[in-house]
Structures are given as C-alpha cells and as structure tokens.
Image 1 (cartoon, chains in turn orange, cyan):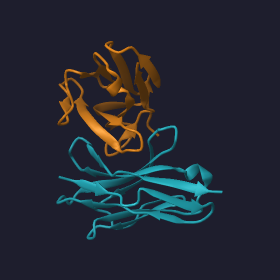
Image 2: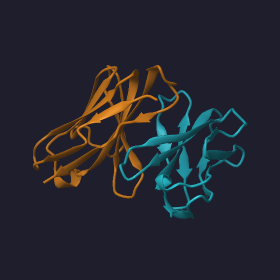
Image 3: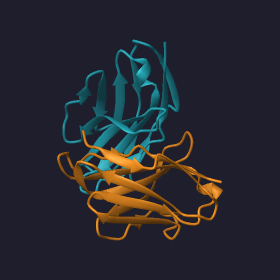
Image 4: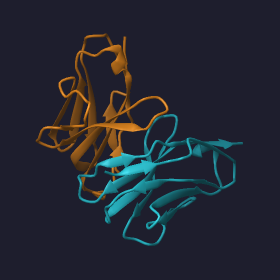
Length: 118
Length: 115
C-alpha cells in the first residue's frame, strides 16, 4: 500500500525553541496533507489542511503563527511548532491523499511524532 | 456538518471469538466514504476497511467485515476469530466525496483481545 513517512518519530526540545516535523509521501503525489494532534486516549484532532503550493487552512482555535505549515512540494509537508511550550507536548500525526499509484479516495497516515517540550 | 459517534469507549473479546464495534454518523450528503482505522499501541493509523456509500454490498477484508445500513446511518465493524494483535483503538471515519479528503473521526473504541 501507499506509504507516508513522518520524521522524527520522537523529539525533545527546550521550551522557547522551535521544532520541525516532516511528512513525506513516498510513492504518490500528495496534493493534500492533513496535520492532526492527538491527546492521550482521545481521537485525532484536525489542526490544518495543506494543499501543495498554497497556504494551509487552519481549524478554529489552532494558532497559525504557532503551528507553521508548509507544503512546498507534492511529496513533502512540514509542521513547525514555534516557541514551543510544555503544553505543546503531544502526539502529532500527518496524513496524505492525492494521485498516483493509490486511490485518491483514501487517506494514509504517517507514523506520528511524539513531541516533548521540557 | 458531519458527526461520527462511537458509543462504546471500551470493549473486550476472548481470543478466537467475534466482536462487533458500532458506529453511527449524521450527514445530509449522499455520496461519501466510511472507514475503519486501527491504532495499535505503536500509534500508527492502519486502514482496516473502506465502504463506498453508493455500494449496497458490505465490504469485507479477511476477518473484518462491516454492516453498512445507509438509511439508519450505521456502519458497524465485525471482527471474526479475534487475535491478540487486534488489540488496539479503532476509529470510525467519514469522508465526503470531493472535499479534498477531509476526515471526520469518531471518538474511538478501545478493543482488548483476551487470551
């Protein structure tokens, strides 16, 4: 099946610093990528939708200046958590859909990234 | 707006037995997809099964099958011959056709398979 790779799997950063998480589609062109945040024992919360070459669309309540999303190519989207604080510690997961070897009507998820801000 | 409801926060089943996870959704759309995703302790989201709303036949994937009742807006997942590796969170999801593939997730059901 289709593969979406997310990196890094684990990251620890100091409070006040920024951290970048990458999401790559390995065998298809991802025209749309989604970023989610998942709190313990809860469902996935959609943070933003990014389309290649355009600005991301953020969900209500998500700070666009804090969670910078870039989708500069058809295979890569990045989420940058700026000026991270301990409350930003969470599991972040991306998903992608698009054209190519897989159906455009299914979303495939990355492995997720654990962010711990100390 | 679309909503997805999973009314069973936790379930358990004996190994080799059958279990059914429930999911209901609310939508005014006619063309959409429904999914079940599995999230094991590794947190990787794994597609279990997909159903297209225009198809009346229930989708099946090996030990996994669905009971899709479009009029009732119900989409339950049946797991037959449960295995220890089936222990995971299961999320039901709805996607409207043509929306850029935005998903609406249920709150999840934590399934434990007991040896």
